[in-house]
Image (cartoon, rainbow, N blue to C red; front, side, top):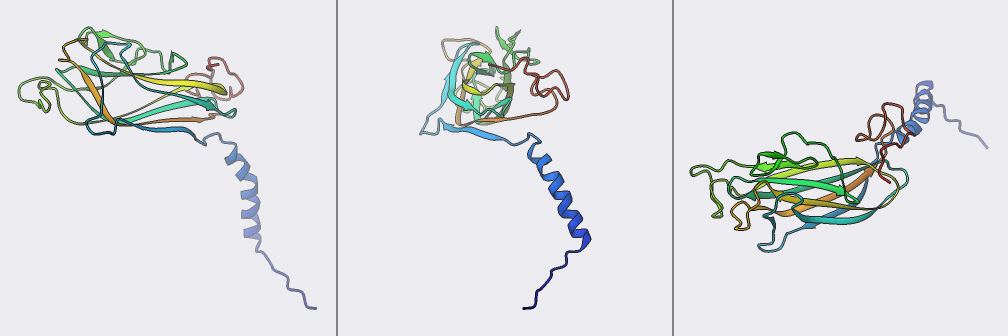
Length: 219
């Protein structure tokens, strides 16, 4: 019986060897994202979430997830639409197991005392001017402009295990009359995890190459 021998050009062999060498490195790069939750909320007819409280504000999302063992960073993404009354700032924070994802000053997050006091751990994601005939789409004053896209992502160091994630919303001007109320509706919340082998890992590591140093990771 005659045998057929297939000849593979050396260039192809070299390419295959290169792929064999580099593929494991790509697998170990640590940039695979694991989606742990994807939740749509406030999609019903006239359904929305509102707050007329300064921080700690009102709970708008809570979810308990299991973070796999290969992860050292947890992400929380909020994508929604919202508006505010009376020129108030719509302020938000994310927490994991009751602690801030990002506890710092968050820049100009003036989320209390009518927007004059900075509140660490919070971020202002919506603030519209309240003057003249700006909008008043829903009888909430000139700053009541419907509707505004809000998209933000938090990240924090994390350890394997069960963790409870939450998002809270607040107004910069607490007012029981509702004249400075803030709103969201038609929201999506996503929770993801990954392993970052180099860099800060959202502030958890000491520096590049400090992969096994878990100082600062949430337990």
